[in-house]
Image (cartoon, rainbow, N blue to C red):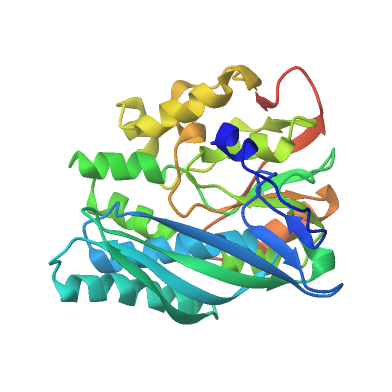
Length: 321
């Protein structure tokens, strides 16, 4: 995709476009004036769960996330959906209901949308947000000495794989669903109080790849193995039993030469490359604010963790310690 995007005609440069596709950020940001900028993002995907209502909730939660990842607040959303011809309208209604409820919870307004016919059901949102122009949070503005905070545990992809193979427990599935349907709004509102230098969300590329994007070839990082959280204790068991997605392998192939694995066990590698659906925020925060922010974040149902720190650029981008 990088090769495709680099070959597209650029047109006249618009100086008000603060963030576009030239970077690897989470959404586009367009400056309206010195005080207000608009955030634009769009995301949709096929269902990873059987329940259409849960599918709508998960897809909407995921779509809204990129606005908070840019330091903003979502204000309006449009549905984007594809459904097979002849699908039961009640099923479609459940998908859209799940999505609408999450838009409302986000404090956002659902304004309509667009639907097409397709063999596979797909759903998501196009979301518009606003942000203080001076407080746009890009994903690659990390500083040496920053602590790295992750606001949701990892392993959703592993748990969903175990679920598809019918080896998981009900509690495993419920834990994955709780993570995927929890808005990043609550963690973001806490982080925005502090000196955050860079922010992104962890989605399909997994923790390691999203962190590598934040480092941007200009910094390196240490990740503390013992601090990397998993959704529950069974994630380790399922990973060791090879219940992981093909996406994990693709993610590893992309950047494995940039990682010093140290003595990390194999399951931690799988956890770090595990594709997350509606994952948490990954934050590079001033070290003086990290513990205070974590204390506040710890009051939320989904627990955060300080998982590492930013260091000077070295031979590798990521060192597992």
